[in-house]
Each structure stands twice: as C-alpha cells, then as structure tokens.
Amino acid sequence: MNDPKVPVTLLTGFLGAGKTTLLNAILSDARPGRIAVIVNEFGEAALDHDLIETAEEEIVLMRSGCLCCSVRGDLSRTIAGLIARREEGDLRFDRLVIETTGLADPGPVLQTLLVDRFLARMTRLDGVVTVADAANGPGTLETQFEAVSQVAMADLIVLSKTDLVPPAQLRSFQERLRGINPSARIIPADHGKGAPQHIWGLSGIRPEAAAADVLSWTVGADPLAGLSGMTPAAPASAPSPHATRIETVSFELDTPLEDEAFDRWLDTLIALRGPDILRVKGIVFLKGLNKPFVFHGVQHIFDPPRPVPDWPTGDTRSRIVVIAKDISRPALQRSFDMLRARVTPRPGARPNQEVFPK
Image (cartoon, rainbow, N blue to C red; front, top):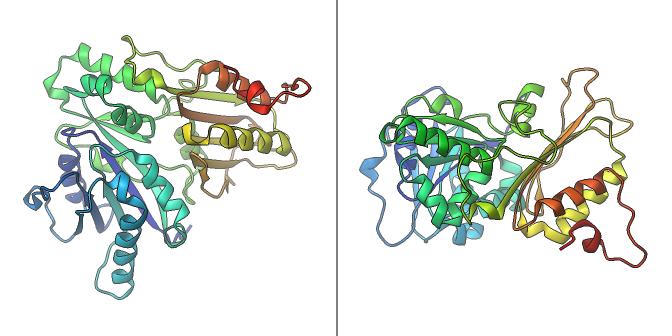
C-alpha cells in the first residue's frame, strides 16, 4: 500500500541512557532511506553536533527547552517547515526521527501528531523506541517517574550498556521492564549495533501492517505472554513506588462484541480517566463484521481505526491492552466487566461508582 504520510519514529530514554549513540547507529544504516532528525534538549547548553554523524541527513535542533513543554507549537512548526522544504525540493527525506529530551513524557508528542491538523494529514506514527540503560536503569526507575512512563509507552525497548552488568542483573532488569510493559519487544544493543533493523514499522496501526504485525504489536512478541486474563508478567524484584503507579493489562474476548458495548466501554473509560490512560490499543471484532479493526489511543486522542483485511478466517477474538497510571487493577477489571456487558448499574449510581470503585 502506498502511504503518502511521512513515518515518524519517537526516540526516548532517560538522561544518559544512550539515545545519541543509537541515533548514530540509525543514521549509519542506509536501508530505511534518508532520515530527517529533530533533536531537542533540556537547558541552555547546545547539543554537541559532533556527536551526530550528519552525513547526508537533515538535523534540526530545537532550543526552546523541554520538548514535553513546548511541543504543541514548536514541534508542529518544525515538522511543517521540514515538509515544506521537502515539497519545495530543498530537502529530501523518507522518514522522520524525533529524539526527545531525557526528561520528556512521550504522551504530548504522540498527541501532537494526532491533534495538529497538518501533522495528522502529513505524518503518521511509526513507533515509539525507548532506550533503557541496563547499568543505571534500575535506579532511574526507582527515582524518576518519567523513565517509567517512557518504558510503559514504548513499542520497542532497546537495552544499552548490557556489557557493564552481569547476566543475572540484566535478566532481572528485563523482567522489571516486562512488568511495566509486557507488550513491548526488548532487544539488547551494544553501542547501538544490531538495533537499527528493528526500529522501523513498529506500529500496528500503519496501513501496510499485516495481521501478524498487528497481533505482535498488541500482545507482544510472545502471543501468550500478555494475555493471561488480568495478570501481567510479574517483575523478578520488588517494584519501585514509581512502577507501581503503572498498570498494563491485557484482555481477550472469544466472541465478537456488540458495537454499542464497545463504544460505551471506551467512552466511559476515556471520559472518566482519560488523562490517566497512557496508551490503549487493540484488535476488536464487532458483530456483523467479518474482519477486525485495530485501534490505538493516547489519553483521549485516537488514531482513526484501521481494518485488518488479511486476518485469518475463524479467529474472532478481540484483544485489548490498556496502559494506565494511578488506576487500580480492580478498577480496570471492573471496566472490562462493562465491556463484557455484565455490569448492571445500581439505580441512581454514577458511572464512576460502578466502573472505577474506590
């Protein structure tokens, strides 16, 4: 399928995790075509451009401060400027990479790509890549909620500095990451080597995604790992206070849903707790349709749903993943009970009393 939209990859990771090292590796790989890069940093010190092999790529530095704060205006203008120069023939690039500051929450960036009319028409999210430092990452997860959020919202987690820790510590860290985000793929990368070929085409919402891609994006590399009812993979060590604020739950229904039940569930979830929904994604079968559709949202902003035309015959299961902060597991389970159409509200009760009990 010929997609005219520019694919956008969001590169996140906490301070010192190795985003620039991975970016160098990405730019040295010619397979994905020409890449335009937007680099943002926190504070007054400008980025040392010698760290980035500009080669034939286009590097744009945003100096307006933290990307998560200035994203609404500055990011829109920067991308619009790049696309305008491409259309005028001044630039040639096939895809766009946005490297965020280590303090950035990915949510506002993802929302900007959807709510800005120009960007929604001209770009599409290709994936969220988070670099996790195997040496310092465990401590960062303990102290910085932004790092937990970056892991929770990732489609792909790239482990850096794996050579600096013993195997047992590395396995423990991987299990902690899986406990936060069971659906993300985790790969090691020594100074970025071996990672670039896994960076692209991560989002299951992209037009050319096949059924297998959509399934992997929704439930993870292991289709059985994230679909254990309401029980996600447990971390090997005790979770940090920041990690316990994140709940990632996967849910599966064997039979097609009533469209009214699905709409009611999603509308209620977003209306009552939209700001706390980091990401929600899934494959949904509705009664009366012979193929499912894939959907994806960040807080209360959603991509247009996309049908999955090559879905295998006979599989009518719906699979939904919710990544949320500060919502208890029983509350999310009650929400899914509503999706099952098993909730019968008490007379006079408000929706949040039934769906999100305290």
